[in-house]
Length: 117
Length: 113
Image (cartoon, rainbow over all chains, first blue to last red; front, side):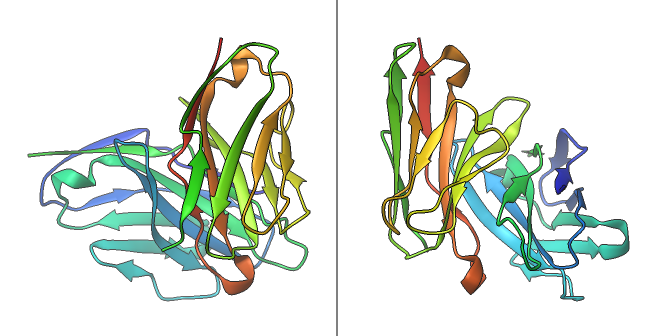
């Protein structure tokens, strides 16, 4: 069964520094897709970045990047030059992609990031 | 960006009553999802759909039904609402065939008293 685990409940950093949030996943599928989402204080859930399992290059979007370590089933989210407005809850998610996959999109419990001035 | 609209945004229901949460998406996505979010549990999948006419059980389907009458609409139905179903519910849509991401609605806060 697929599973996503985020072990860091909360992280606090100083503005303009770099933060890494951890995520490990379990799947028996050789093809899968990994996502990071951000939930703002208003409750809105926003897509940030994705990594497809067959791609070796780490994805980068703006000041978000991923550290994809396939042998360790790990997909870390890196935020560089953090800003106050990056304060939010960050969710890691996975969808299996092989033949016969269920189409389920499963989430971790989330990591709360607080960026201090 | 995909538009996913949930209604109502807030709902107070009576125990034992029927509640219907509605979701509409305008990007012709095949896949739609209903999640509930509770403190300490993250986002848990209730039901999902591959397309019009299909519904599948997620990880916590008990006490909920789903209906996908069209490509655009996906409803979550609580036939006999209970206080334990007090939560924030999110609808989402995406299209795996086109390798899109999943986009979320703004959520519905349901309180069952």
